[in-house]
Length: 165
Image: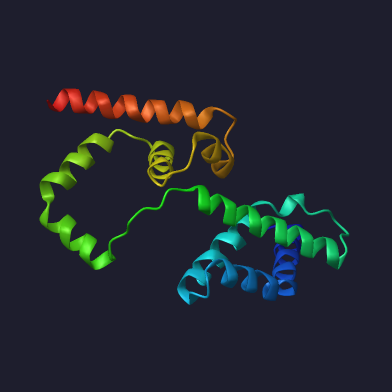
């Protein structure tokens, strides 16, 4: 790791340390005081801050940094509100169901068997409710590439389904 990479990580850690109270309070407020949800939001916000750290101007004042952190947090909260809510099942229950329903698990495995790692990742994000444009941004793809990958995944799965019929 080059020495300037270490300073970049150190600078990011210092930024987070300076604004940790603000980040925590915004996440707590948005999560309506739910401690577990607050921790999840903080994870999302920190990942977003890291991903967009290059947009913070070098030599920014404390007030400019604080405003940048607020804007980035608001961006995460707005994104999460747009995402469709998905009912989740506790991990133990999901593993138990998957272990018992081998036919369903095998059918899904057969349909996704020919996908490469990037296609699997795009499929997961699509199933999580992300749009193709959001996937382009998340995976740092060329605009429109996620749509092409999404289409390729669907076509491969359709071909697999036809073969099995």
